[in-house]
Length: 139
Image 1 (cartoon, rainbow, N blue to C red):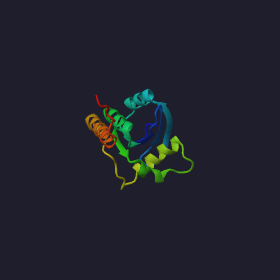
Image 2 (cartoon, rainbow, N blue to C red):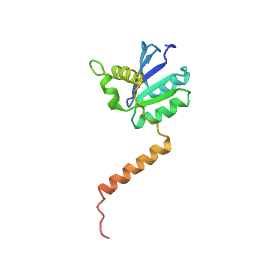
Image 3 (cartoon, rainbow, N blue to C red):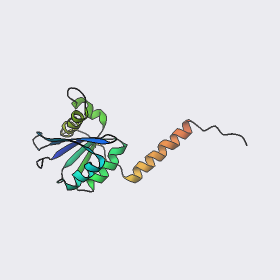
Image 4 (cartoon, one colour):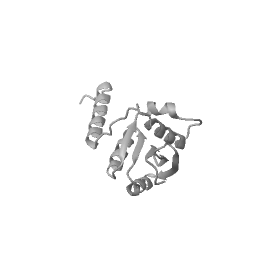
């Protein structure tokens, strides 16, 4: 497990599936853990490259893991899909994330700061209100 240089994480609401690979692409470990366990695991784990699919929760997790000294990369989900082998499950998704990240021409998403995420959410709410105005009662 200490040979892992690349860790793919399939993010979920309550559980996270990890797939670790060495520098040759050989699987070193597969783990399932909760949010607290994941934070504790990476706080104690040696610095490596951690890859996740880009989503709102991935940006928070990227900031957290980067604070532990890991290099964090996010991949857009449509770039991971072609690498899923066989029947889809969470461990297979984590492996596909590692496979996609190991491609030299892969494009990554830059993790957003907390301020960028807040501003993005504000713009989405504003756009929603502009598109669907609230009916106002005449007083």
